[in-house]
Image (cartoon, rainbow, N blue to C red):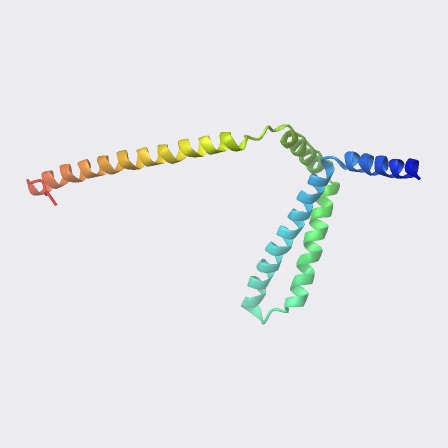
Length: 142
């Protein structure tokens, strides 16, 4: 009994490992199919609306078929599939910043943005005063 549960666990672990990064590639193609469905559905609806009242079920069916077939054909294309696999492998090598690093980097961005806004505001005020002086001959104080 114990040996059987261990062998089932090892088969599941091997199945998870063999899928590896491929599951992310397949998920990306699924997202592409959904995006293609949305685009084709909206595009055909818009074009069809110029000529007659669109049939929503027919358009959605056409868009679903186009999305699935498009994703399937891209998945079967060796160049696209190879590129997708390469992208997934590169993303697996990325080392993501820790929470502390992200917090400090965000703080630097916020402080830099504030300093830049103050400097640009001061330069704008100075330029405005200079152009007012040139055009009117006096510097407005308010």
